[in-house]
Length: 577
Image (tube, rainbow, N blue to C red; front, side):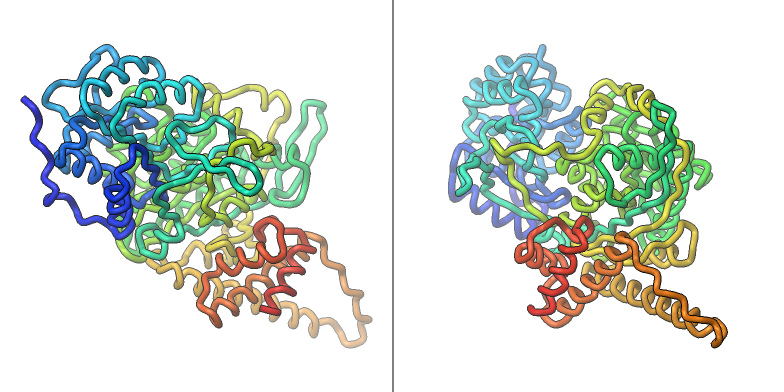
């Protein structure tokens, strides 16, 4: 028996961006439509409403959803069932066709890549709408891309969805339109775009505070040399990578101190009105994930849920955690794009993966808003590349083909191996041995600006930031961070003044100690943020837009990565605006 058609009048109300995108889709009536919407904006609801419209008016007879993971197949099927669309999430390539009482099936990109001819036959049998969720995954490998293209070329309609449309390779994404720009490079073009800044303004997503932790790290090279470096200080990429990995070592002091701070922040959020708020630690490999889980148990006295891969039972553990009030989840791979755990509000980015794509996917787990005023807090190592990504949360990126590639990050190949076969590589251990690491709150990044002065872990200065109210609007976050920073600087000036009058009058004045480059950068960054805040109050423009305008006028990276000369130029520029 054929399944009953969905009833459009029973659908939940659409958000403004969803209505606008649906009107645009129905107006165009084109074969291919690409919708880019930030994680948490409601891409699934939008796509299912399009599917219902096309089923009801007879444009299509069947729906196929292609998702990145097995877990998301179940999630899609459940969401579709709630609006009257029955999708078979248990479909296997050997089945050849879905049962007659389903509107269609949910499959994975890997499934399609293994047997594209099966899905091509299914697509040709009935007029089909294909929903390609997180379409950039079709560029993960040539076989996946070719398989998707071969399988779904006969489809009547194709709807492409993504929250992170950019990639760092040259694999074209099937069915996505590319247009050549003035620089001669091809860029992906979306038919509907709803970015993080739009969603933040509409209250659809949470404001995200990034708490960046630096600290002293020590390690031994394979030649027996002992090296020390401060995480976040300017140095070569190799040294940054080794300092970063040393900080993430479960045996050091950096991770326990950061986890203790993250759990304190989680407690603040729970006491402030998010009673079920949960935390997620994102690890690089299985071994570290298990070690972090043991550390969390030592800190909180409560066991953490550990999810390592797509193996049997992983989806059930995620679902159980999502429905519970348990504090912490530790994951290597499973909690990625599309996995819906709305109560996640605190994150610890304990992986050395650093591509913009992976970072955006990870941060997307924390931004889904449930009620006005909820905020998210993500703890990150104070590494220039990550600080730049955190400062550019609102940037919209396209997939660019043919652009010269600079290697981004330090450990993405290792992460790929860890995700693929879940076995930690021994190569890094052969190259160096982590000896020690301590944590220090370096800065808080919000709306493209950085706030605060360095604070040792466990001090009242750190607690000032960990204790920020849990229910705040984006504007209130900016105002409160600006005030906290001003209070810190005022306290520093008072201490300096007291120290200046305490020495005996007869004592000769000590010569001024020149500031180090790191101290100068911190002072200039604070001065720039104060000037940006002043302009915000005069004009009403968001801090991030003012910083972006200064970068446009002066050039250079975000302020967290800017050189002393670049900061000085921006300070001079903002004073003239």
